[in-house]
Amino acid sequence: MTGKAGEAGKAAQIGDFAGEAARVKILGAYDKAMAFWPEPRGRKDVETSFGTTRVHTYGGGAGTPVVLLHGQSATPAEWAPHVAALGADRPVLAVDRLGEPGYSTQTAPVRTAGHTADWLEEVLAGLGLERAHLVGHSYGGSVALNHAAHRPARVASVTAYEPPRALAKLKASFVLNAVAAFVSGSEKIQHRWFTRLIGDTGAEPAQAEALTQLSLEAIRGFRIRLPQPWPMTDEELRSVAVPALILLGGGNKAMDARRAEERARRLIPDVRTEIVPGAGHGIPVKLLNDRLPVFLREVDAAAEPAAGSRA
Image (cartoon, rainbow, N blue to C red; front, side, top):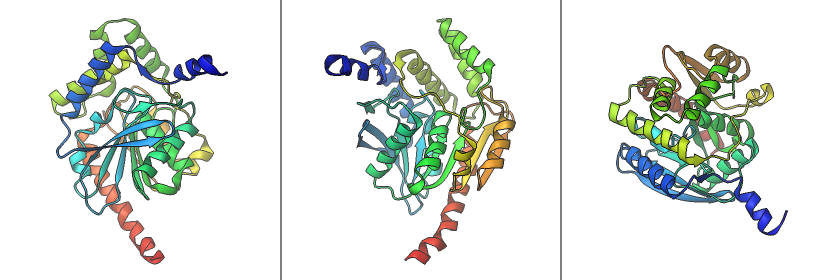
């Protein structure tokens, strides 16, 4: 396929806003939700072969940088309750994923899990990161695990909260309820479905509502052209050689937490798992802010002797 037909086919595989009104509404909600990030907040734009990727930055210190990968339609705004805790002793970099609503600009299709790994590797290289901890929520958790399995050279550790399909299939009831909510056309029904899915994370109410409104506007007004969350094979999970932290909501409606935990424990060589009683698909603020900094410091400390022996 060449010429105008080829360009049209390529454009159909690139995520975009449903129109100018949708773009204005979504980015307005994005900016409102990002206002909850702590200051000073920086930003970088990284050029990749798939387009320009916006990265929000915070913090510093000697710790290995942590790269945050958000859930689908959530944007880096979802990390606002966690940034200060994670950035106390290390740089924090939250990636605005290509092909989703936000300030990144996609120019080439991302069709497969392999393309996703290629894109993220280019982002890490463009940021000048020799090593980084990958932390992902939902779709971002699948992206992080996929990267640790296939492009591990820069990965210090991987943390995934509720990675859909990577460890266990989605519940049929979750898929049906999601479709029903958005087919209904009722914003009230959609809001109720989303808040029940996420659960009570312990986030400040105004912040939680801003994130909810952003995600709902994004789902309604942006056409995502990314691969669906992909199941990881046993071989892929066995190949995750870095320390891994898998966190799952005990009350989540998306997948079977027990089955996901059992598979992670059985296959990932160096894994810590936890099912959080009563938690939904959203990240419990206190849990992540308590557990994750400790995990990252432990991984960094364990790596120091090896780094010294290479000097």
